[in-house]
Amino acid sequence: MFENITASEIAGYSVGALLLSATISASKLDSFVSISQRSSLGMCKRCGDLKMIACSKCKGSGLIKQRGPFDFITAVGEKQDFGLKATSASSSSCMNCRARGHFSCPECSK
Image (cartoon, rainbow, N blue to C red; front, side):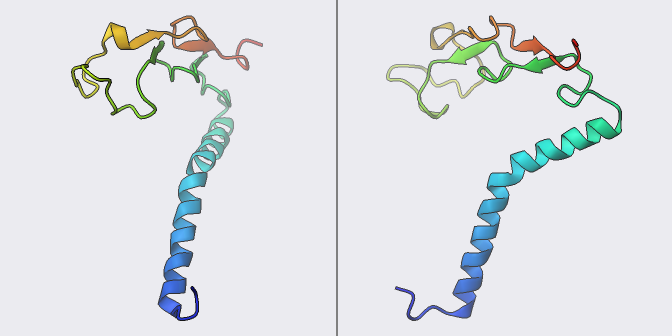
């Protein structure tokens, strides 16, 4: 399979692997940078002095959508609204945060 591979193909595979690893680690790098900026400014490391943290299950909306694994897949017979308005039949209240969408920051409430 790799008998006739050229130097430019090796370079292309290397750059592709580098871009893939950068994409995967971007969220961790972003959280590390934001925590260090918050601590250098004297703010709370978790919430940034907002005194609340978004719920990780509903992403701060208070509702959990009952759709397919990808948000753009619609159920049969359902009108496509492309996210402009939420239908009550396709979502339910988040039980993790009791439909509030946030929690009090555990670091600030000490």
